[in-house]
Length: 75
Image (tube, rainbow, N blue to C red; front, side):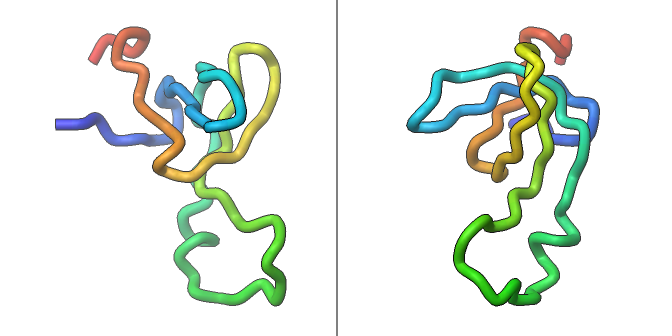
């Protein structure tokens, strides 16, 4: 069974255009992504997760872009 992504979890962020990066989930914006409200635009879509990367960057990601880092979290 795949571990759940939750605030505080160590994760790996995978994107096609970037190398894989590791960090910690710091916020879950699920209520904004499932509200069904249209933002009236097709640019800058809401991403569910805010992740503080180990290199100091803050990124926002969808569920499919994250894997729980079980090697670091001890799970």
